[in-house]
Picture 1 (cartoon, rainbow, N blue to C red):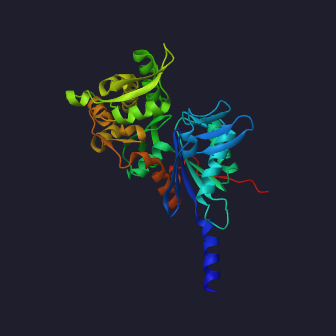
Picture 2: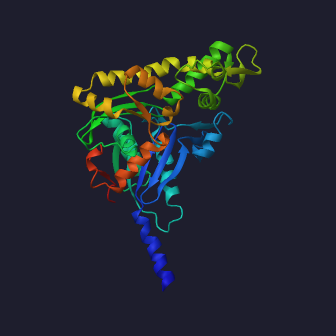
Picture 3: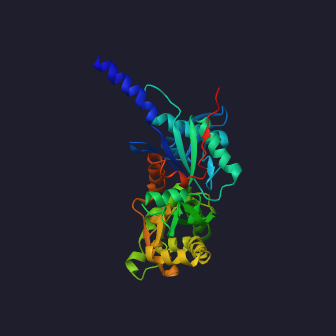
Length: 360
């Protein structure tokens, strides 16, 4: 009898596991109600173009980037925060939702909250909703990523006071002023983590006539990337090998790149992000600016980890700037908090009316 009760309890508990998803250009994170973050994987899908079959998704697919025969392509279904390939995005979402329920007896249609960039059109939002429904969701809610990041950072978003959050992801940088549970003013720009990688790729081509891949550029950005110059000569001269193909000879080559060179490579894009933050502040009502001056600016997303970025923003805006705790997970944590308290926090959603799965 006891075994049977445990069996039934496990079966019916499946229906309680609603999900929050940070659907990022570079990475997808999944939060399960009552459990926390259970999935962190790259937003990459490997496809056999001869058969149209999906070969791998997430970590396994990322390993294939730049290392596959011509007919196997590792692709990202999201470009700059927008679904660029609906069917592949649907497959990827289905994979992550099924992975959450892999140990469960019943596969229900859960409620799902999805984090999206601020600047999406209604058509782009509809694409996210429909892809999530087709992937197995029962109901879909949307939340804008800076709002989710602010909630994840435990900022008082429902109070009558200004909060400035800068969420620097892979495809987009979202800058938003939040007050009374809503976004008062925002700006979304396409300069973010991926653009910084391409800046390093372009620098390698121009300075060293060396062709490098995105994986190499990302490793260089993580190890040597910085936004703020330093007077410490030893720190400026930190270096690492950079391997690729010489564009003149066509042969493999290794050169050494240092921290100061990487900072120069990233300088233009970093300035663009900082300038956009200043523009948002300039366009913000003065009462909210006064709040922001006392509360400070908060940086979230993977780009917040770029060394010295907080110091540069603080210097340029004259406002204290902080990196939120665990910036990589701020959006999914915030979406998870909304999921846990959806009745209390319904006002922060893009549309309180959720999209339901069509009845058969």
